[in-house]
Structures are given as structure tokens and as C-alpha cells.
Length: 150
Image (cartoon, rainbow, N blue to C red):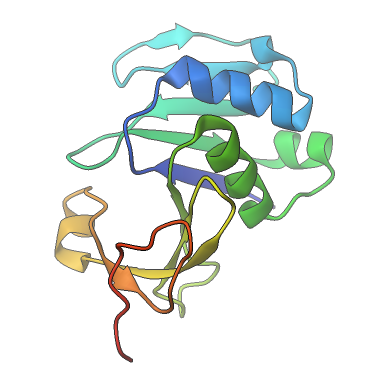
């Protein structure tokens, strides 16, 4: 089962993310559910193709979440492809979780499409906050991000 979780690390309007997803992936806007952290702003009857939720905790602004219905509808896109489209269309930086439990570096995607592995503060992450400590290599769209040595 493929799942997609794209976390916005800058403030973004939930409706803007829904419009971006609808346009980028040719999915009906009315099949994207919006949740403000307490109630569904836009409840959707099954099947929900994607959900956009307000982030929970400091440093989390919004999350795009989708599963197998979205994957089937969009041709099994890779999570990085989804993140790149959403970052470009919203003009916001996003992060994508590591692909496996053995990998600890997340992927940061800038609005210009540049991306790279980043290290998050694990103590902050445990508290629900996404604080980037630095990148494994330079990311052109985020030139002020420090590059960490291995």
C-alpha cells in the first residue's frame, strides 16, 4: 500500500493546498477533505482521495495525506513527485518522511523543485515540531540552510 504524507513547514492555507492538489493531480476538489484540527471543514463521502489537515503542534502548519485511492487515481506517483508538485504550486517548503525505518533523514523540497536530505531535531520531532537542523548537501532553493558534516 502506498501512502503519501507531505508536511508543510511554512504557513499555508488549507484551501490553497486543496486547490493545488486538485489541479496538479487532476482530482476533483470535492474529493479532498479539509480538517482544521477539530472538525472537518469539508467532509467528503467515500472515497476520500486526499485529506489536508491543520498541523498539530508547534512548527507544523499543514499536512497533505493520501493513500491507495489517490495512488490508483494518479498512477502510483512517488512521494517525492507529489511533494514537488505541492511545493511548486503553493510556493511553500515541504518535507517528506524517510522511506524506511532505517533511514532517518527526511527530504526537504523547495518551491523551485530543488530537494535534498535534511536532519530534523529528534527531541522537537517527539513533541510534534519539525525543526530542521541542517541538510546533508546544499539545496539550491534553500541557500541559507546549513550543510551538516557526516
